[in-house]
Image (cartoon, rainbow, N blue to C red; front, side):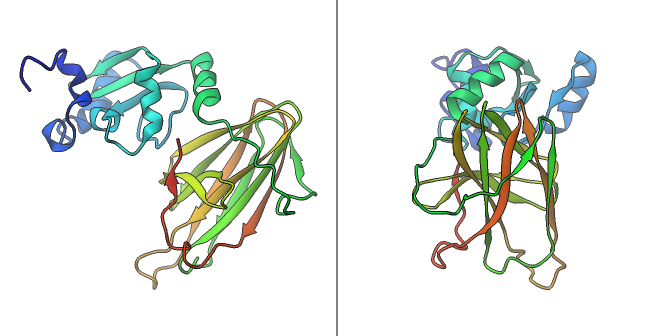
Length: 246
């Protein structure tokens, strides 16, 4: 880049992909963490608390993961890790700011009974296991019904395989983050309201392989009532990827 792009650490505002980063520093991040004596949060699909590391390409304006824009637009403090990665300081209060700004689930005010009682009560810190061993065919969607008198956060962590986790829209579509093994994402449920989240499975490309996807939901902050239910998907949309969560 020429002198019009300054400082060079913000080049991702103007360019991306292999013009900027082709993975040349990826293997060095762990070394930098050891040298700095810091615990970095690596390889996550959505912002999580701690020193959250993001590659420059993932901050590019053209990138589909718009949630990362929160880090730049809200001036979250960061340290440069090498030349192409940044570790953002997502403290407890700043994580709450992010959840309130980008990850709060709006009530849908629907008249259907998809989230009708009963819903089981879970205290803060509770983990709700999820596992499927039957092939999802062209795709399978689960509705996660949540209510909380005081408001709560609900996260999903993948332990095996991969799937989409997000929130439902009024049109019955799942806006979600694609989570790989070891990744997690969080959403905030407002107090005294019903929230609808979603888990969408992905079929294997090789149908002959034994199928397994597993993980767990975690309740954070306050207690919540939760139920995971199979949700009918229009056949025309069954094999579509969800829109990315904001």
